[in-house]
Length: 332
Image 1 (cartoon, rainbow, N blue to C red):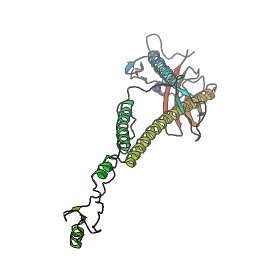
Image 2 (image 1 turned 180 degrees about the vertical axis):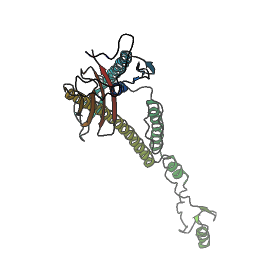
Image 3 (image 1 turned 180 degrees about the horizontal axis):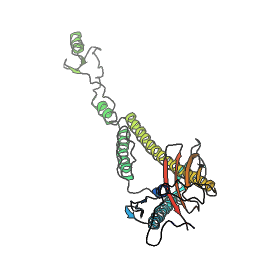
């Protein structure tokens, strides 16, 4: 045993090199390096300054309080994730088979499906990609029914115009004895006068104009234009449904990427948990239904007993999602 002072007189040992072996003395510089990872330090009087941890918007002055705050936040986040997962499972269900084009399909849950309610009116215009609701479809149906009814009434109506034209047309007089084909008096002048007047010669030598044929009635609704309108309505409905399916497909792929990152981080943590070294570097990959991810992590053991550790890890997917984690651990 070596004493450099007594109960009343204390002395410092200076110019001490950094300890390297298990039984070497450690310097204040080495202690500061270890404490810096925890946010602590040694003041001018040799006292250890307690750390301050900013966790969940509050300041914690002990490692235990910081870990308790983190634990509470993780439990709260886990509860929220479970609620979201439960809600998603109640709304969506896995498709039993793929579509004919090879793409996956996300179906609404329930034996008879589900109804999407409270949908606002979508914009009906060229290039619009909004979804339409039942009220808009009902208004379109009423307009089409009204035009179809008017078209049926016009097509099924009797040709009254032709009947009136036939009733108003005059009949030529029959030839009597002593009269020639020129007219009632047989006078060629009167006949020529009647032809010059552009009509049929009458008994008094005058002429009446010949009535023209009445045109056939035409419908006021253009059937070709109606068919074009129906085609545009069908095209818009198909586009709205296709947009909705693409959005659901993107959501499904995002869930798969999150699952792939979780699998990669789990694989990385399992491969570094049992290493008995001061520095630990691990990596892991994950895969979930066509999506892949990779995780990389580093862990540092801060003392010989292995009772304090520091770790940093990150994960990313092939589509650009990223996540980073930072942690500390202490045991006794």
